[in-house]
Amino acid sequence: MARFEILTIFPEFFRGFFEHGVVSRAQKKGLVEIGVHDLRAFTHDRHRTVDDRPFGGGEGMVLKPEPLAEALESLGIGPIGSVGREGVSVILLSAQGRPFTQAVARELAGVERVVLICGRYEGVDERVNTLFCDRELSIGDYVLSGGELGAAVILDATMRLLPGVLGNEASSEFESFGVTDGAINADVEGVPRSQHGAGGLLDYPHYTRPAEFLGARVPDVLVGGDHHAVRLWRREQQLRKTLKNRPDLLATAALSREDEKILDRLRAEPSN
Ligand code: SAM
Image 1 (cartoon, rainbow, N blue to C red):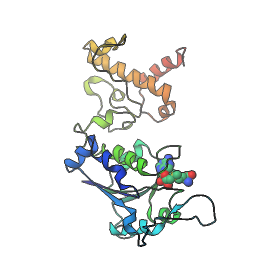
Image 2 (image 1 turned 90 degrees about the vertical axis):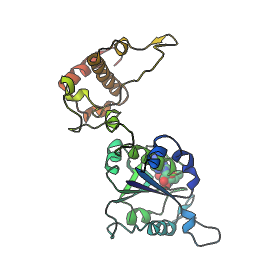
Image 3 (image 1 turned 180 degrees about the horizontal axis):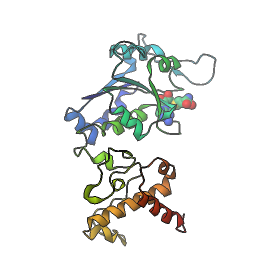
């Protein structure tokens, strides 16, 4: 069972998020435990103060280190390197952090206990980061008002990689950014390895009924019943979408010689 702890000044923020879909089901199935901790519960003054003015002057307020350190202590979590930190990752949500990617989600899915610290105002006293956090993660190159959305994003993306959470254990491997290495089931029905799993590419487009919608028809190959043709079409669509929207991913994707040929053809198309 994986455990997530969220430290925040807005615990209510997470209520709706935990009550729906995969997150809710994973908790009910006992695969995941989530604790949300109100930082104000770790203050000792009448106003339950969690922030203070920045040393050196300047605009805005900064989250104080003491409530965060106390909250961590209440969870039995000390500074980096202290006893009991094995199997624990303490993460600071920060616009200055390393990018959170599917690869980081896979790393975190192997961690027993993930602690997510949500900043607010101008951010968190840097000593919390240096003393307690083994990761500083950003969910994108933009500035949010708080770390709560980031914590929800990291929790969701990580949790769906845990065994049993999605029901069909293999399904996350077939999504966008799916594994790029030997973990992909090889050579099913003679189709080369790279035809299975997203292999580090974006997912292919999905369609459902009706077969015709506002004059737009579902591609014929998907209703023709030829499974091999469907697989080849989907792989080409993955390559097409990745080339168009995220060509940077092609450098690290698992590509076969056939893939390279398809890419050469796609690159030669007039729109590219
Ligand atoms: N002064 C900070 C800066 O310029 O980098 C921005 C602070 S922001 C208004 C408040 C909090 O939102 C941060 O402490 C962090 O926890 C969270 N946050 C903002 N942008 C984020 C991002 N891209 N990824 C993750 N967390 C973010």
